[in-house]
Amino acid sequence: MRARSRLAAGAFGALAAAALLTGCGDAGSSGTDAPEAGASGAGCAPVAGDQLVVLTDDKKLQNTDNVLPAINKKAATPQLVAALDKVSAKLDTPKLIQLNRAVDVDRKTPQVAAQEFAGANGLTDGIEKGPGGQVTVGAGNFSESQTVAELYKIALTAAGYQVKVQTIGNRELYEPALEKGQVQVVPEYAATMAEFLNTKANGKDAQPVSSPELEKTVAALKAEGDKAGLVFGQPSQAQDQNAFAVTKAFADKYGVSTLSELAAKCSGQATVLAGPPECPQRPKCQAGLVEVYDFKAGSFSSLDAGGPQTKNALKTGAASVGLVFSSDAALATS
Image (cartoon, rainbow, N blue to C red):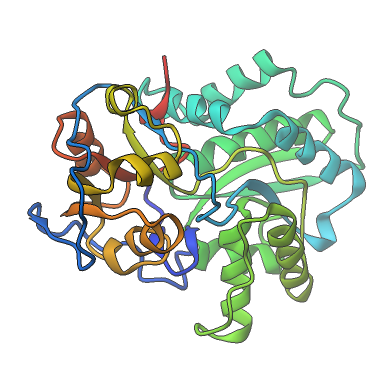
Protein backbone atom coordinates (compact mmCIF):
# COMPACT_ATOMS: atom_id res chain seq x y z
CA MET A 1 0.00 0.00 0.00
CA ARG A 2 2.80 2.41 0.86
CA ALA A 3 5.57 3.26 -1.52
CA ARG A 4 7.79 4.52 1.27
CA SER A 5 10.41 2.15 2.57
CA ARG A 6 9.64 1.54 6.22
CA LEU A 7 11.83 -0.41 8.55
CA ALA A 8 8.69 -2.00 9.83
CA ALA A 9 10.54 -4.47 11.95
CA GLY A 10 13.79 -2.65 12.28
CA ALA A 11 16.15 -1.60 14.99
CA PHE A 12 14.56 1.80 15.48
CA GLY A 13 11.01 0.59 15.80
CA ALA A 14 8.22 1.58 13.50
CA LEU A 15 10.38 3.76 11.38
CA ALA A 16 9.83 4.96 7.87
CA ALA A 17 13.46 5.90 7.55
CA ALA A 18 13.83 5.37 3.84
CA ALA A 19 17.29 6.85 3.59
CA LEU A 20 18.95 5.03 6.42
CA LEU A 21 17.53 1.67 6.39
CA THR A 22 17.31 -1.38 4.30
CA GLY A 23 13.58 -1.52 4.91
CA CYS A 24 11.66 -4.65 5.44
CA GLY A 25 12.89 -6.35 2.35
CA ASP A 26 10.85 -8.13 -0.22
CA ALA A 27 8.40 -10.75 0.87
CA GLY A 28 10.15 -13.95 1.66
CA SER A 29 8.93 -17.46 1.18
CA SER A 30 5.37 -18.04 2.17
CA GLY A 31 6.40 -21.04 4.24
CA THR A 32 5.96 -21.26 7.97
CA ASP A 33 9.14 -21.78 9.94
CA ALA A 34 9.76 -22.50 13.58
CA PRO A 35 11.23 -19.51 15.43
CA GLU A 36 14.50 -19.84 17.28
CA ALA A 37 12.87 -19.56 20.70
CA GLY A 38 10.73 -22.61 21.29
CA ALA A 39 7.21 -22.16 22.58
CA SER A 40 5.58 -24.39 25.13
CA GLY A 41 1.87 -24.56 25.77
CA ALA A 42 -1.10 -25.00 23.48
CA GLY A 43 -1.16 -21.49 22.02
CA CYS A 44 -4.01 -19.94 20.03
CA ALA A 45 -4.80 -21.26 16.59
CA PRO A 46 -5.68 -18.69 13.90
CA VAL A 47 -9.30 -17.62 13.55
CA ALA A 48 -10.42 -16.33 10.17
CA GLY A 49 -12.39 -13.10 9.90
CA ASP A 50 -12.79 -9.99 7.78
CA GLN A 51 -12.22 -7.38 10.49
CA LEU A 52 -8.73 -6.74 11.87
CA VAL A 53 -8.03 -5.14 15.23
CA VAL A 54 -4.75 -3.88 16.69
CA LEU A 55 -3.65 -5.21 20.06
CA THR A 56 -2.70 -2.46 22.49
CA ASP A 57 1.05 -2.14 22.99
CA ASP A 58 0.62 -1.79 26.75
CA LYS A 59 4.33 -2.15 27.59
CA LYS A 60 5.40 0.30 24.89
CA LEU A 61 7.53 -1.87 22.64
CA GLN A 62 7.20 0.54 19.73
CA ASN A 63 8.56 4.06 19.44
CA THR A 64 6.26 7.05 18.97
CA ASP A 65 5.73 7.74 15.28
CA ASN A 66 3.14 10.49 15.63
CA VAL A 67 2.35 12.61 12.57
CA LEU A 68 3.57 16.20 12.78
CA PRO A 69 4.63 19.01 10.43
CA ALA A 70 8.30 19.50 9.60
CA ILE A 71 9.00 23.11 8.63
CA ASN A 72 11.93 24.99 7.16
CA LYS A 73 13.00 27.34 9.95
CA LYS A 74 13.03 30.46 7.75
CA ALA A 75 9.40 29.85 6.76
CA ALA A 76 8.16 29.14 10.27
CA THR A 77 6.15 32.26 11.04
CA PRO A 78 3.88 32.00 14.09
CA GLN A 79 0.78 32.05 11.88
CA LEU A 80 2.12 29.32 9.58
CA VAL A 81 2.99 27.06 12.51
CA ALA A 82 -0.36 27.75 14.19
CA ALA A 83 -2.25 26.80 11.02
CA LEU A 84 -0.36 23.52 10.75
CA ASP A 85 -0.96 22.82 14.43
CA LYS A 86 -4.70 23.02 13.70
CA VAL A 87 -4.29 19.95 11.53
CA SER A 88 -2.43 18.12 14.30
CA ALA A 89 -5.17 19.01 16.76
CA LYS A 90 -7.81 17.41 14.52
CA LEU A 91 -5.96 14.18 13.71
CA ASP A 92 -5.89 10.97 15.69
CA THR A 93 -5.23 7.41 14.60
CA PRO A 94 -8.87 6.40 13.95
CA LYS A 95 -9.35 9.51 11.78
CA LEU A 96 -6.11 8.78 9.93
CA ILE A 97 -7.30 5.24 9.30
CA GLN A 98 -10.53 6.63 7.84
CA LEU A 99 -8.60 9.07 5.64
CA ASN A 100 -6.48 6.18 4.35
CA ARG A 101 -9.61 4.15 3.74
CA ALA A 102 -11.12 7.00 1.73
CA VAL A 103 -8.09 7.03 -0.57
CA ASP A 104 -6.82 3.45 -0.58
CA VAL A 105 -10.15 1.60 -0.48
CA ASP A 106 -12.83 4.03 -1.64
CA ARG A 107 -10.45 5.39 -4.31
CA LYS A 108 -11.02 9.06 -3.60
CA THR A 109 -8.21 11.44 -4.42
CA PRO A 110 -6.13 12.80 -1.53
CA GLN A 111 -7.55 16.25 -2.35
CA VAL A 112 -11.17 15.08 -2.06
CA ALA A 113 -10.52 13.08 1.09
CA ALA A 114 -8.79 16.07 2.69
CA GLN A 115 -11.57 18.48 1.71
CA GLU A 116 -14.22 16.18 3.16
CA PHE A 117 -12.25 15.80 6.37
CA ALA A 118 -11.68 19.53 6.67
CA GLY A 119 -15.37 20.26 6.29
CA ALA A 120 -16.48 17.57 8.72
CA ASN A 121 -13.96 18.55 11.38
CA GLY A 122 -13.98 22.36 11.19
CA LEU A 123 -10.34 22.41 10.24
CA THR A 124 -10.15 26.05 9.22
CA ASP A 125 -12.23 27.47 12.07
CA GLY A 126 -10.36 30.26 13.85
CA ILE A 127 -7.21 30.15 11.75
CA GLU A 128 -5.35 33.46 11.94
CA LYS A 129 -4.19 35.15 8.76
CA GLY A 130 -0.44 35.19 8.24
CA PRO A 131 1.81 37.42 6.15
CA GLY A 132 0.98 35.45 3.01
CA GLY A 133 3.37 34.36 0.30
CA GLN A 134 4.12 31.21 -1.60
CA VAL A 135 4.38 27.92 0.29
CA THR A 136 5.20 24.53 -1.18
CA VAL A 137 4.15 21.54 0.86
CA GLY A 138 6.20 18.49 0.01
CA ALA A 139 4.80 14.98 0.24
CA GLY A 140 6.23 11.50 0.23
CA ASN A 141 5.37 9.08 -2.53
CA PHE A 142 2.59 7.32 -0.64
CA SER A 143 -1.04 8.20 -0.21
CA GLU A 144 -1.06 8.94 3.52
CA SER A 145 1.62 11.59 3.16
CA GLN A 146 -0.16 13.10 0.17
CA THR A 147 -3.47 13.31 2.04
CA VAL A 148 -1.94 14.95 5.11
CA ALA A 149 -0.10 17.35 2.80
CA GLU A 150 -3.48 18.32 1.33
CA LEU A 151 -4.77 18.98 4.86
CA TYR A 152 -1.79 21.27 5.41
CA LYS A 153 -2.61 23.04 2.16
CA ILE A 154 -6.20 23.68 3.28
CA ALA A 155 -5.08 25.08 6.64
CA LEU A 156 -2.35 27.25 5.15
CA THR A 157 -4.66 28.56 2.44
CA ALA A 158 -7.08 29.62 5.16
CA ALA A 159 -4.16 31.46 6.78
CA GLY A 160 -3.66 33.50 3.61
CA TYR A 161 -0.81 31.63 1.91
CA GLN A 162 -0.65 30.61 -1.74
CA VAL A 163 -0.04 26.89 -1.42
CA LYS A 164 0.83 24.05 -3.73
CA VAL A 165 1.48 20.41 -2.88
CA GLN A 166 4.38 18.68 -4.57
CA THR A 167 4.90 14.92 -4.33
CA ILE A 168 8.66 14.49 -4.20
CA GLY A 169 9.50 10.91 -3.32
CA ASN A 170 11.22 9.34 -0.37
CA ARG A 171 12.88 10.97 2.60
CA GLU A 172 16.33 11.04 0.98
CA LEU A 173 14.86 13.45 -1.57
CA TYR A 174 12.42 15.61 0.35
CA GLU A 175 14.41 16.18 3.53
CA PRO A 176 17.31 17.94 1.76
CA ALA A 177 14.76 19.96 -0.22
CA LEU A 178 13.18 21.00 3.07
CA GLU A 179 16.55 22.02 4.52
CA LYS A 180 17.31 24.12 1.42
CA GLY A 181 13.90 25.80 1.45
CA GLN A 182 12.88 24.32 -1.89
CA VAL A 183 9.82 23.12 0.00
CA GLN A 184 8.70 24.76 3.22
CA VAL A 185 6.58 22.07 4.91
CA VAL A 186 6.43 18.26 4.88
CA PRO A 187 4.26 15.83 6.89
CA GLU A 188 6.56 13.75 9.07
CA TYR A 189 6.65 11.02 11.70
CA ALA A 190 8.30 11.88 14.99
CA ALA A 191 10.46 8.83 15.73
CA THR A 192 11.29 8.18 12.10
CA MET A 193 12.46 11.72 11.43
CA ALA A 194 14.39 11.88 14.69
CA GLU A 195 16.38 8.81 13.69
CA PHE A 196 16.81 9.98 10.12
CA LEU A 197 18.37 13.26 11.25
CA ASN A 198 20.33 11.50 13.98
CA THR A 199 21.99 9.01 11.66
CA LYS A 200 22.46 11.60 8.92
CA ALA A 201 24.44 13.75 11.34
CA ASN A 202 26.13 11.06 13.42
CA GLY A 203 26.44 8.02 11.18
CA LYS A 204 24.40 4.90 10.65
CA ASP A 205 25.58 3.37 13.94
CA ALA A 206 24.54 6.37 16.05
CA GLN A 207 22.81 5.60 19.32
CA PRO A 208 19.03 5.84 18.76
CA VAL A 209 17.38 8.98 20.13
CA SER A 210 13.69 8.12 19.71
CA SER A 211 11.64 6.64 22.51
CA PRO A 212 8.29 5.04 23.32
CA GLU A 213 7.63 8.28 25.23
CA LEU A 214 6.33 10.97 22.87
CA GLU A 215 7.77 13.90 24.83
CA LYS A 216 11.26 12.37 24.76
CA THR A 217 11.02 11.61 21.05
CA VAL A 218 9.84 15.13 20.19
CA ALA A 219 12.56 16.70 22.35
CA ALA A 220 15.19 14.64 20.52
CA LEU A 221 13.59 15.47 17.18
CA LYS A 222 13.67 19.21 17.87
CA ALA A 223 17.30 19.03 18.97
CA GLU A 224 18.30 17.20 15.79
CA GLY A 225 16.16 19.50 13.65
CA ASP A 226 17.75 22.62 15.10
CA LYS A 227 21.10 21.51 13.67
CA ALA A 228 19.52 21.16 10.21
CA GLY A 229 17.53 24.39 10.17
CA LEU A 230 14.22 22.63 10.72
CA VAL A 231 11.46 23.18 13.26
CA PHE A 232 8.45 21.03 14.05
CA GLY A 233 4.86 21.78 14.89
CA GLN A 234 2.79 20.05 17.51
CA PRO A 235 2.56 16.26 17.15
CA SER A 236 -0.88 14.90 16.44
CA GLN A 237 -2.39 11.93 18.23
CA ALA A 238 -2.30 10.07 14.91
CA GLN A 239 0.35 7.37 14.72
CA ASP A 240 1.59 5.32 11.81
CA GLN A 241 3.89 2.76 13.35
CA ASN A 242 4.40 -0.94 13.80
CA ALA A 243 1.44 -2.71 15.36
CA PHE A 244 0.32 -6.28 15.82
CA ALA A 245 -3.13 -7.20 14.61
CA VAL A 246 -5.47 -10.16 14.96
CA THR A 247 -8.93 -10.74 13.59
CA LYS A 248 -11.78 -9.54 15.74
CA ALA A 249 -12.99 -13.12 15.78
CA PHE A 250 -9.62 -14.20 17.22
CA ALA A 251 -9.69 -11.42 19.84
CA ASP A 252 -13.22 -12.38 20.87
CA LYS A 253 -12.54 -16.11 21.00
CA TYR A 254 -9.41 -15.87 23.12
CA GLY A 255 -10.25 -12.71 25.07
CA VAL A 256 -7.22 -10.68 24.04
CA SER A 257 -7.02 -6.93 23.50
CA THR A 258 -3.42 -6.20 24.54
CA LEU A 259 -0.05 -7.70 23.75
CA SER A 260 0.32 -8.68 27.40
CA GLU A 261 -2.89 -10.71 27.16
CA LEU A 262 -1.69 -12.26 23.92
CA ALA A 263 1.54 -13.34 25.60
CA ALA A 264 -0.22 -14.70 28.68
CA LYS A 265 -2.93 -16.61 26.82
CA CYS A 266 -1.47 -17.46 23.43
CA SER A 267 2.21 -18.29 23.78
CA GLY A 268 2.37 -21.82 22.46
CA GLN A 269 2.56 -24.23 19.58
CA ALA A 270 -0.69 -23.36 17.78
CA THR A 271 0.09 -19.64 17.51
CA VAL A 272 1.37 -18.44 14.13
CA LEU A 273 3.08 -15.04 13.90
CA ALA A 274 3.24 -13.46 10.42
CA GLY A 275 5.55 -10.68 9.30
CA PRO A 276 8.49 -9.76 7.07
CA PRO A 277 11.41 -12.19 6.70
CA GLU A 278 13.63 -10.25 9.10
CA CYS A 279 10.97 -10.08 11.84
CA PRO A 280 12.40 -12.89 14.03
CA GLN A 281 15.66 -10.99 14.51
CA ARG A 282 14.30 -7.44 14.81
CA PRO A 283 13.85 -5.75 18.19
CA LYS A 284 10.55 -4.15 17.19
CA CYS A 285 9.10 -7.36 15.79
CA GLN A 286 9.37 -10.96 17.04
CA ALA A 287 12.58 -10.45 19.03
CA GLY A 288 10.93 -7.52 20.82
CA LEU A 289 7.78 -9.50 21.52
CA VAL A 290 9.92 -12.15 23.19
CA GLU A 291 12.04 -9.68 25.16
CA VAL A 292 9.35 -7.22 26.27
CA TYR A 293 6.29 -9.46 26.53
CA ASP A 294 7.75 -12.97 26.80
CA PHE A 295 5.50 -13.87 23.89
CA LYS A 296 6.58 -17.03 22.09
CA ALA A 297 4.80 -18.07 18.94
CA GLY A 298 4.79 -21.68 17.91
CA SER A 299 5.78 -20.81 14.34
CA PHE A 300 6.62 -17.84 12.15
CA SER A 301 5.19 -17.25 8.67
CA SER A 302 7.58 -15.23 6.49
CA LEU A 303 5.41 -12.90 4.41
CA ASP A 304 5.55 -9.10 4.04
CA ALA A 305 5.76 -5.97 6.20
CA GLY A 306 2.20 -4.93 6.93
CA GLY A 307 1.23 -5.71 3.36
CA PRO A 308 -1.45 -7.74 1.61
CA GLN A 309 0.14 -11.12 2.31
CA THR A 310 0.16 -10.66 6.07
CA LYS A 311 -3.33 -9.17 6.18
CA ASN A 312 -4.67 -11.94 3.96
CA ALA A 313 -3.05 -14.58 6.19
CA LEU A 314 -4.87 -13.12 9.17
CA LYS A 315 -8.22 -12.88 7.41
CA THR A 316 -8.07 -16.40 5.95
CA GLY A 317 -7.00 -18.05 9.18
CA ALA A 318 -3.41 -18.82 8.16
CA ALA A 319 -1.89 -16.61 10.88
CA SER A 320 -2.87 -15.84 14.46
CA VAL A 321 -1.19 -12.45 14.74
CA GLY A 322 0.62 -10.30 12.19
CA LEU A 323 2.68 -7.16 11.85
CA VAL A 324 0.70 -4.26 10.36
CA PHE A 325 0.88 -0.46 10.37
CA SER A 326 -1.32 1.24 12.92
CA SER A 327 -3.02 3.59 10.42
CA ASP A 328 -3.69 0.96 7.75
CA ALA A 329 -6.97 1.36 5.92
CA ALA A 330 -7.67 -2.32 6.56
CA LEU A 331 -8.21 -1.44 10.23
CA ALA A 332 -11.21 0.77 9.46
CA THR A 333 -14.34 -0.44 11.23
CA SER A 334 -16.80 0.79 8.60
